Image 1: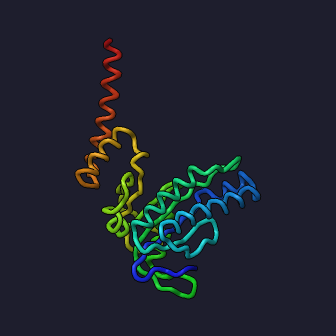
Image 2: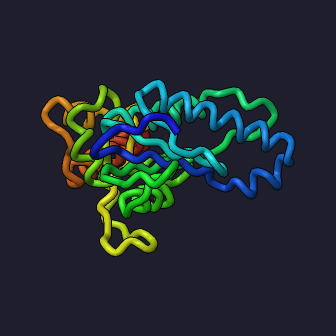
Image 3: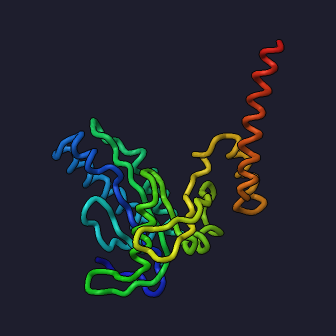
Length: 221
């Protein structure tokens, strides 16, 4: 473990979704290569953005960052690098990432504290290929994110073994949104983010209404 940032840090957990099924499908030899390569890509994204690797046992990576924004950008880049990597004849892994900001105590080569467990559970709440983050991390990061990255409210969740529920957000790249919603999001980013749920529903409604009007015109003509 490298030198850890002092004070409050942002915890970064990853987990490979369906790792057992992937192992059964592609066999031990190919799985070992996929596992090693996916960890290399994750760790490159972490260190490139100023993070420190705490642990890389199993099929995931645990890292810490001095700033929440750096952790969010690292998560975005990690997903992109995994998606764009050439996995040859093996299936690429689907990785979920969880972010939470808080304090922890150092115990030898480990970090302990409820905040660490909360970050781990937030990772469990994400789907493969997605990043979930706590409200604390969102509050610290969202005003400083680079263009193209937005945080979408994912509602309040009960996390396993954690006494207090957590309001989660999902990291989304604007390019991943549907065209009509993307236009609305880009306008809202200029006016102030995030838009309300009502605004997003209106954007989806406009797209649906436009499609229906086109069909009607075709039938009439």
